[in-house]
Length: 279
Image (cartoon, rainbow, N blue to C red; front, top):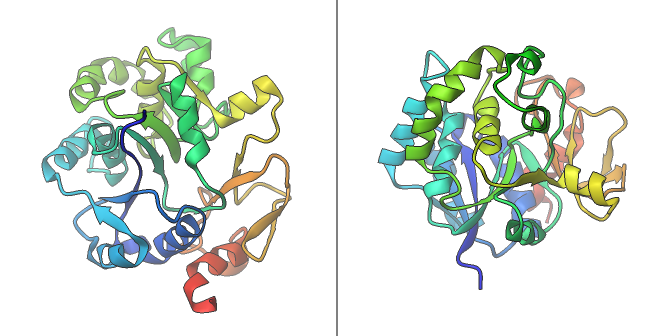
């Protein structure tokens, strides 16, 4: 029998509207699963006040978050709250999903836990050229082709408590520093890719599973900026196969940081931001 299962997300008050859209969409499709906020930094009071409404709790172990902040300084001049997602591997849930809060979750996520019978890590999307690594990683001789080609988006990760530990992550830093010149450093993504592919545990993605099996019923992450994506009434209507799992507003724009006219699927984001006022 599985142990406790739950979902983590990282946020602060600067993105409260983005998080509201995430929470409205997530609770529409996943009303009961435990949900926990990992604060991006100390400014999260407004979001914490939404906990009763959306049924989530707040991470309380400041010591572990401080360790994540210190790990971020191995790659950046200033602390990066994105690295705090690493605490999830030492959190309360035996099996967990981490989901970025700049998403609209369009379906139930329970199916993702089934893959943990065979894998230590399951992302939604991988094998994205240029996502985590510069071209120079191919000649560096530090990672195998399979490892660097995995290149996963780390905005949706299914895993188990203990698959990584902060002690193990700290021990991995010297090896990671050797490949830092080949990382596309922005946030934690290349480092987390490095941790996954050097963990010794099997890893995959929904994308790889769908490609390998030809099973087009395995849901897909949809990037809002992908050309041709269309949505109506809170649902992606093109493409419809594979079924959309979530819409992700990653770079180059996000709904709260751009002129609405320039934001892909801005109407979809508004739909979920205002969902409770529409019903």
